[in-house]
Image (cartoon, rainbow, N blue to C red; front, side, top):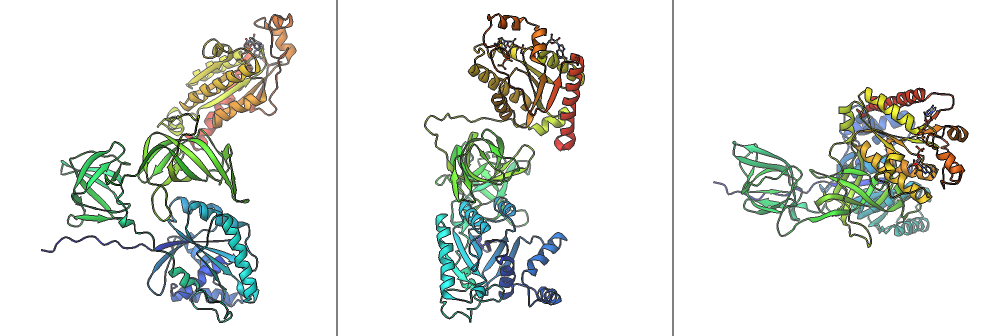
Length: 628
Ligand SMILES: Nc1ncnc2c1ncn2[C@@H]1O[C@H](COP(=O)(O)OS(=O)(=O)O)[C@@H](OP(=O)(O)O)[C@H]1O
Ligand SMILES: Nc1ncnc2c1ncn2[C@@H]1O[C@H](COP(=O)(O)OP(=O)(O)O)[C@@H](O)[C@H]1O
């Protein structure tokens, strides 16, 4: 009988990111490298030679990437952004090509690149350009530790030592500002092959490594097998009607039968009773990278998203987490927005508690800001309603590789987790728990999208009359609504407030938050508040976010005063009522509202019908656009 053996750990290929400013020779370099390392099939080489000749060119290596792209478009190759090659010594690499800024971010975020090494291609005759800086900064922010600078096109500098050394010095000082210390500089001519696999015959003065020798020095991916084990639970099955099987991929380390494990945040203890396999005999051990199924003893019940780890090496545990953010959404990110944080097999509800700093990829500086711009990079603090188990992000591993997902299941950003966030002095420990039911779920079931329709206008302009009549019509259409009226609000939630500028601002703020909560629970909210100042309405709009629309009830002051339904204008004119809007307190009409309703010359019924039609158009149009 053969004794059970320890499963060997096979080192994966080393992923290496290749970036560079447009026209600095990245594609030519990749083609040349694959050719010189013997990684191209003969027919591919013939194809490139033929298309080069056809255009009267010597040999144009950049055609290789074009042809891979075409094959990818046709579904022939799997992915032109991941190209395998190997060195003569057998060492394997995977090139992660990052054609543009957005693709670069996507590749890094979605885990296509679990790289810890990069080649930065710079045209030695041009020096660093805009994308050189941006890419270098992104490499730094991703934490990539091993950067080789490829000084390309040295033939254009006539292989001159002085000029090449100067180019190297310039790049060095640029990278130093980003705290990047390049591992090596290699001067090459990618087109002609100088210093790619063989030393250049044109520069006797150069004693440094060729590019291939530089690649040999790139550290192998850290051995995940030697780290404490991490086993995120993917699924739990019942087997034989009795045994419960916990399945998943062992992300790091080794486990063996008999090992003690801790399960999830609650910390229940168990032992590995067996390691099952579907097609082979049960194993006694498993190693990082394997998909396995284990039986626990006692039969505790973990859930998908739980995490198994050794008692002596637990992961970090925090409900507030500092994270770097690579933001992909086309709209800016603001504090208070909620997302799902996807982390291995787990999903946690998180809210952006603060935006701590935003990087400027042009000036290579960071500054505090209230929002993260589209495709920006920032440091943020995420707050969850429960503790999250995680390991701090480390490039080249799956540790801490968080991804933010919005309520429509779209990936909106990569969020490598840095560590627990300390509460700042004076900061409140708030961990908002957003609903599990998404706006999308509600819209699908209701058949319409929620919204906030904010009516602003002078006292007596007709806000309440129109709002009430509109609500009645929407109700008839089967639409659930909430009416928030100034007078009503002021008799309860806001009974502590008067009509000073400060009190009105507070009144509007409260109304906006109540409206937001109601809209988030799927209601169509009609707010009727004088809300006289543009600045306060802008704040309400920010609180209401995508739900918010402002509707101007336009009635001349003289008409309102003539109507004077509550006799308030008369009292204001006689001086009995102070700070009355339009008399001795300002009203700023909105300059570009979503809709204006003119009441002078239109009946209240007509206005209510116009508003009803508008609202229905908005909430149903949005549905047809793919919300519902
Ligand atoms: N000084 C003064 N100025 C304006 N309005 C006054 C004032 N005193 C009492 N009222 C009554 O309060 C209603 C307006 O409250 P709002 O909450 O809509 O006002 S605000 O948005 O906070 O400015 C307003 O209701 P509407 O007439 O429906 O607008 C009045 O009934
Ligand atoms: N087209 C109209 N739209 C709304 N109200 C109108 C219109 N024409 C006349 N009115 C009258 O104007 C008054 C408006 O009062 P109200 O709705 O309480 O205004 P607000 O809430 O803006 O203070 C009511 O008496 C209403 O009957």
